[in-house]
Amino acid sequence: MTAPVTAGEAGGAPLVRLDGLDVVYPGRRGRGVWALRQVDLQIGAGERVAVVGESGSGKTTLLRALLGVLPPRARVGGGAVLCPPGEPGREVATVDLVGAPERRLRAVRGRLVGYVPQNPQAAFDPLRSVGHHLREAWAAHGRSITDRELAAELEAVGIAEPARALGQRPATWSGGMLQRAAIVAATAHEPPLVLADEPTSALDRPLARTMLDLLRRRSLSLVVVTHDLDLVPGLVDRVVVMYAGRIVEDRPAADLLRHPAHPYTAALLRSLPRPGRLPDDLPGDPPPLTEPDEGCAFAPRCSRAEPGCRDGVPVLAGGVACLLAHRQGADAPGGPPDKVDPAPEAVAP
Amino acid sequence: MIRVDDLSAGYPGRPAVVDGFTLDVPAGTCVGLLGPSGCGKSTVLKVVTGQLPARSGTVAVASWSPTDRPGSRPPLGLLGVVSQDPVASLDPLWTVGRTVAEPLDARRRATAGGLTREERQQAVARQLADVRLGHLDPATRTTALSVGQAQRVAIARALIAGPRAIVADEPTSALDPTSASTVVRLLRQAADGGVAVLVVSHHRALLESFCDATVDMAHPAPAASRPGG
Image 1 (cartoon, one colour):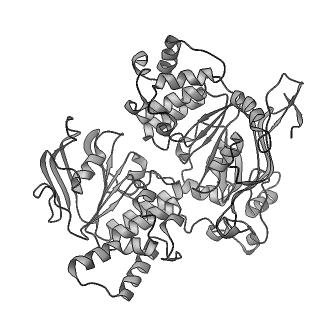
Image 2 (image 1 turned 45 degrees about the vertical axis):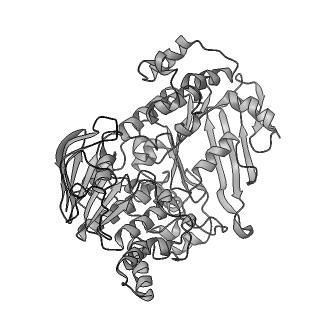
């Protein structure tokens, strides 16, 4: 169930690690829905990572796996472990996010991970004051906070008249105010890792930018699932792109946004709207997730696909899972996977 | 085609959300309404579609005016509506085919005439192909659709009866970037086909990517932009 790792290794000790993770939800007529396929991911201490991809690509299931809250009915293969940070050189026990007893998981997860939900309206009990919720967040970690300190916390995230606002119910707060409060609650105990599931999807653009900046300021390590790829520059160090349950690209944000290596990432960037230019259309739909995949899942929609692309599932190597990018990378002397199909005016990091 | 003149509108017991607002969306053009949450964008759409009475001013879509005839509904087939939440806008018990054909069926019930069964099927197939869902079986339940597919079905429903105008309230805010780009292209295509399209969004770059003009409700001087692609 648990395995020792040595904290303080070079490159930042991993806080959480997924190893060849498969997640299958039971579907109709005994056919499973493959939400995640062979996902390898490691989040190191101090890293900030954005997870992007189309609806149904597995982003939320990935976040659930990192939180250790996959539905009990899901069939899970591979591994997912939390690695509590310890003193440098000291061995600490990792915790299995899939098989550990809930009590053991709770004790470690609560301390290590803060979670910001997609819809703050749904996360607050409408019958309790906002202040009640925030005090609960401190109490859950055995801490207490005075009203004056709490008001100062809210003021620091831009809530006006915080002392008065604390006594109000969530219904009287706007979505943006509630999302700020949710971020304060998730980061109350200064967790090493913050997970956020589309925290800006209910907000207008200027507010979304403000909220992501706030999330960055208040987190040590961050995994944020988002559709707002244009808001990613300056927010994260790394971008993970998912397609049909697999990670197809996982590279430093600045490189990926300037020179996408996977044709799907390039298509995703070209579909972002820019003034005076119709966004590019990506024809077709993602494949059904009920079948085992044979070959690259993106090949039917890929303008550069070759017959060989359907012969085997490309593995993630050099941060990209694409046979064409691998070949191009191998051809380039000493070079990493280069751009396959650059996005015009790619997002400036 | 869509004309709003000196509109004042709001909700009972509260000050006006929109005051002195004027807008013109000619046939064959796309106009974007931009602004932060709460500035009155959706309120304008509610008055234009006859869901909310105006306090003063005039509103007209072609020859139908909700301000001249308060409480009236737009004539069948005049106005297509696309909402923010595509999944909630589709009946979960209906098939895709029945959903898309609904405006045709409503017109047939009203006029006791209309298309034959075959013509109806062909119209649905044509419309689904137009919104890049030609591969989808019309017998598919709406619950089996992805969010992006659901919004394309909603657009097919809005277009099938040949409307003169379409209004869309944040049609891409629930969608991922690739689904959003498809929706934007479909709305542009409708405008290029002669429909007046009015789109509400808080995403300036999105509106300026496909609209002929955008109106910022926070600073209501129209700013022209032109799609290039």
